[in-house]
Structures are given as structure tokens and as C-alpha cells.
Length: 462
Image 1 (tube, rainbow, N blue to C red):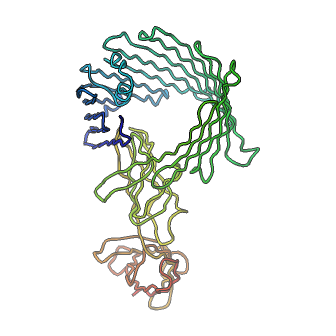
Image 2: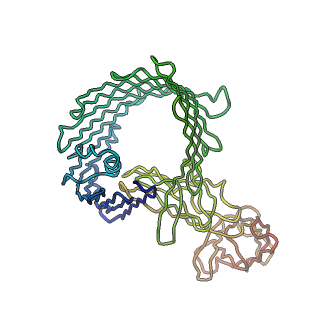
């Protein structure tokens, strides 16, 4: 019996000089696994990581312990748009299993004869500019009692004016079942925006195998509400067996605190309905932040006091009620810009800059901190004691009780200045030169009825 309650956790800690430490745990009633490892940015030579894992698989009669270690290498050659990835894992003892292997072995005892001894994978990806891109991958699984199985995948992709074309060929050989298979796949995606005025795509996929009939898959995919809602409807039919038909419907919604989805499918035998909820959580020095699913490399966005601010490029990602959110899908060892949409800022808040640049290592979670000012925004007309407006270009500084500058602004024509972050009765410091006499103080008072709105004020600089 497999308990439906499953726990998985990951901890990542960045160190100086390009080092990153990481660890993880998986827990379910029939399986426990723990992992530790380290990665190193080796500059122009790429990145290298090493990990050690241990597992405990529980059977009806005993608990079986096992260990494994692995090494990974990644290199991105920017000059040629080439990416190389190598990985190898060796199962140090026969009883080591991944979570997937443990689940299958609990369902089928014969799977115990198919425990892996090692797995090796290689990936080469090459961008060809306007000609598209090609990918070549190789995977080899070796077993303790069998020679294992190999697979080679070659694919080509091309996008032209929104029309996407993909071709792939897979060749797999297995010493376990003594079966070989060749699989060809063709995928075409055509945008329908010009016909429907909505972001929609029609897709057609054709796949044929040396072991199975040709399969046709036709569908429509759409997005709405600034890409927060994604939906899809698909129909599937086999070439030789016209009665082997299937229908699939699914939809998902991405929000500030996670993602929720629903799906429906049916064929001549089964009818399935399902729902799923997913998300990520980061515990940090200022509390706990919930968000959408966390990718391998991500950022914790901090904009204290600014709630509901949208992170550009990530549908549904907005700062929570405290001003925090999670920005995923960062590219390791490269400049990543995290941008906040200024049009989504609450009227009583402001940020000094809308873009922050981060350069994370692989597997790291970096922090992107925005300097914010929370309070009333005001347009103030400032005059001197002689009634003349403050000079054009005068710098206004808003300081707190400790003398720390909260925000600055520049005086425009007729002594007018837009100032953010005002609260209660405070003062502004005006300066227009380097001499002690080239400064004066503006006292202001906000009317209670205008709190949280743009205020129009007058002030005298003394």
C-alpha cells in the first residue's frame, strides 16, 4: 500500500567563489531518500556538480538500503549558441532506488530483477539562427542483471512568423526485453490570432513507430487573462483502428500563490476527471513566501510594503501582501533582469528602480531587493519665504527620524515637485548647491481624508 501523502524538500545555499551547497529529502511510507551535493562555477569552462544519495525502500519483509553518487557538467558556449550537458550516476549498491523505481517495484516484484547499476546521459543543443535549432541526446541505462537499454533522440525545430515546426527521431534498444523501436514524430503549430482576435493555436501531431500504428493528434490551445489561464482541447485517433479514439480537455490557472488545474479525458474504455494544485515555498530571514512552482534556479523578490506588483514575463506572478514573491526560470551564470510593471504599483507606493539584474549560479535562489517607499504620493508647490518658487532643479530629500533618506525628487517648473512615500507630519530637505546656506527645510502636513491618494500641497521652504 502506497500512502498518498508525499513530502519533498530541497535546501540550497550559495557560497563565495562560485560554490553552491544543496541537499534534499523525499519521504513516503514505503520510501525515504536523502541527498547532499555541491556545485562549482568554473568560469569559461562551465559548471560542475557532484551529489551523493541514499535511499531506504520498504518491502513487506525488510528495509533495503542503497547509495548512489553522480556527477554533472554543463557548458554554454555563447559565441556559437551551443549548449553541452553531461551527467552520470552510479548506483553504489544494488538496493539503491529512485522514487519511481521504488513505486514500480512495490507494484511488480519482478522489477527487482531490473535494478539499475548506472545511468549516463548526454545532450548537445545547437541554435542555427534563422534556420532553427537541432538537438541530439543519448541515454544509457545499465542494470545489475542485464546489459541495459539505450536511446538516441535527434530533433529539429523551426519557427517562422509564429508557425512552429518540429521533427524528431528516436531509436531505442533494450537488452531486457530484446526489443528495438524506431519512432518518428512530426508537430505543427499554427497561430489563430488573426482569425479569432485571441491568443490561440491549432496543433497537429503525427507519430509513427515500428511497433505501433500511426497516431494522429489534433488540438486547439488558448491563453487568456494575460496568460494566467491556459486551456486545451485535443482529439486523438489511430490510423488503422478508427475506433481507437480519445478526447482530452484541460485548463490551468496561475496566480500569486500557486497554480491550479483541472483535466478530463475519455475513450471507449475509461473516463477520467482530475484536479491538481502546485506551488513553491521559500523560507527566508523575513518569513515564508508562497508562490508558483520553483525552478532549478530562481529568485526571491523583495519589495517591502508593495503588494500586487506584477513581475513582467511571468504570468500571474505578483508580490504578496508583504511585498514578496518568487521569480523562477532564471538562466544560471548569465545576466537575468527581473522587472516590475510600474503600472501595477498601488497608488500609495513607489520603487526607485523597476529593473534588477542578478547573476545566479546553477541551482541557487538569489535575492532581488527593490528599494521601496510606502506612503502618500503628493504634488507639492514650494515657495521661498519671499513668495518666489523654489528654483528649477533643486533636489528634495525625504528623510526619516533617523536621518536616512527615504526618497528623492527634483523640483520642476514653478516650484512643483512630485514626492512619494509621505506619511504624517514630516519635513523635506531642499538643496541646490554645496554651501551650507544652499539648503532649506520644507514642512508639510497631509490631510487625513487624502491618505492613500495623490495629494496636492503647498509648502514654504525656510
